Amino acid sequence: MSGTRYCPECGAALARHVVGGETRNHWICTGCSALHHDSPMIVVTAFVACEDRLLWVQRGIEPQRGQWAIPGGFMEQQETLAQGAARELHEEAGVLLPPEQLQLYMTGTITFINQVYVAFRARVDTDFCEPGPESQACGFFSRDECPWLDVAYPQVNDSIEQAYSDLESGRFDVWQAEMTEGRYDFWSVSQSGR
Image (cartoon, rainbow, N blue to C red; front, side, top):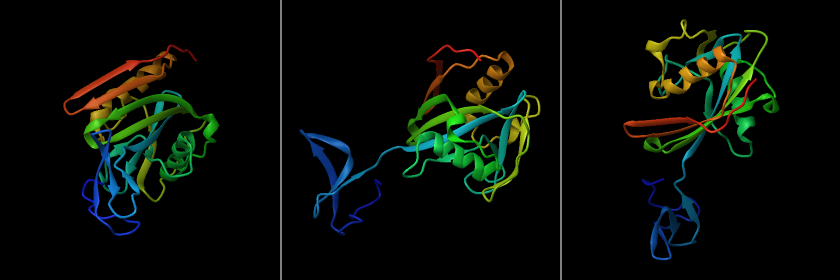
């Protein structure tokens, strides 16, 4: 929202909001006093496994059209985190899972693109999938079959490698990541086995 100069409600000029003498990272309308937040976007993803393979989608839209990624996208209004991940999974790969079947797996911040992400995990008994309108293709790949040279967001390859390692070991922790420009920190925040 930093490029916005006028209130979408009344059309008056926007100004940085100052609270207690401190400039906040949001705007206030000089006309109607409505607050306009420049908050991080929330990305929800689903690591879905069939045996030792993870579900991937080949992106059919920009950014990174033609590249491969774990199914996911931006959370919509009026949905829970798990509902958003389940919706994206169905839209991109035709896999229909109830939100309550998704288990929390990873959380993180990507400060340089102003995003927060929440990833879930699930297992399926069949490798059925079909690309949705935002995907060119989809499929389940083992670590060796993974299209590593055509990954849409190689910045998160450590997270994907961890998912493959967890599949191999059968042990799934909940993971936390913090990505800043040029730095990636990743650690387990829980110990659980399944």
